[in-house]
Length: 188
Image 1 (cartoon, rainbow, N blue to C red):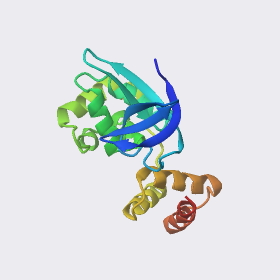
Image 2 (cartoon, helix red, strand yellow):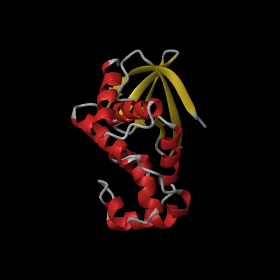
Image 3 (cartoon, one colour):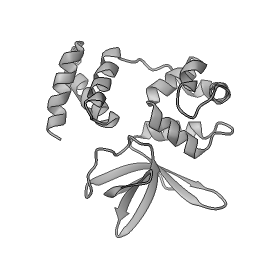
Image 4 (cartoon, rainbow, N blue to C red):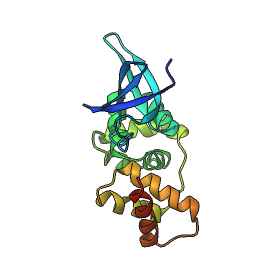
């Protein structure tokens, strides 16, 4: 099993990131947001899941352990394969997914591209005990959405807003959160 790959980021190609380790370049399938802020030549750490089928060995990669664990839970659902799981993780956040499954919200789940009502119901039935409701900070979500609308990736926006809220947990004004996050993003 390959748990983590650490190497040099070589770019993105057709839904994969390319990671070089001692001259060998691995193509690792990932969701749309993971690693979007990296530049070629950056050192990168990828949480991975190796899936072996009759035709192929495929490495799926994630920018966080939580996202990897969520992927592993999703692929346990009958008739939901790794490609669909990656599509789900590309379309939503782990918190949104966790809350929708934990609360049994079929409508929220079926609003995710590629997830119909039957798949949403199956996900809830098979995964309800594996997910918990996550406390969601509405100001944080609003600030992230605003930064994404300004052209930043979800990952960049989420990281910047999280950093702002860690440094100043008492900020509750969305515009102040955005202003501070923009200062952080300007340094990148």
